[in-house]
Length: 354
Image (cartoon, rainbow, N blue to C red; front, side, top):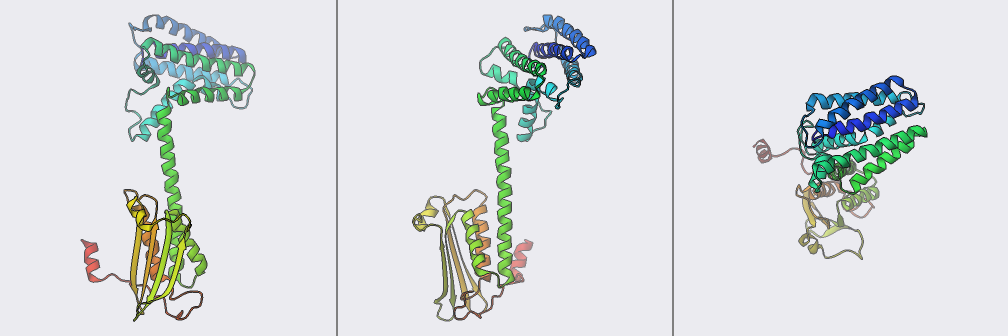
């Protein structure tokens, strides 16, 4: 009851509608109780209409909510339709919508749901320039519209019509930025972030499987190359160069390239200047060979540095485990693939301890 006459007026509209609904369904007890309570609220509103002389307080507003909820369920239980809860849900949709948005707003903002704010529907209407009386009439009009929809659906015995009209009217409030627009944006952003996190987790799982396949030795190298390039492409990469040179001359004994699209490939230095990323690794391997891999990406690097870090992990595995000179059977293919180092040295141990 954040506005003079708000809970009383909404309660009057709802109990009067419940009385009509219960009478249509033959619920005599619910009809009489709803009429008595509506009369009580009408007498109270004489003194509670803005500017109010008396107020409900928490106990009064909670009592109205309890009686309205109980009577609406009692009246709807007499219905013969399949979805009995549609009647109270549609009938109470405006206060339920306001409360639901308040809970969603506070949860998405990281606040407790019991913390107060001035972002309820009557606050939003007043912020748009309506006076207290005009805001009260606007909310009362919404409740009356929902009550009319409920009575029509009961008259024609169709809950689908009631639910459809209810969703349509509430969607108009959101689309018109009257109420619920900011909360909907918060929810969509949170959902998008969650979906992105799940997609990233799945992509990293595929990347880990590719690294494990490389480290296991003798995989399907063509399939492994496809997996590697696909993972790099998901990180925004457009180029990958892998070179393996043999001692002592240092000439390239094996060179493999991947381009996303040669017609769209730009100068790789421009990628870095425009906010892209570059990963370049060179690892000396047992047996006197050196593996070097370089990749460029066009997508901007986030503040956390996640994209280049994933690329570093992938390219490090390629440099460490890719055979020399080629899995396809070129000369010197018998050079073994050995991990660079299985145990950290003493300096590395000290650094990790620090």
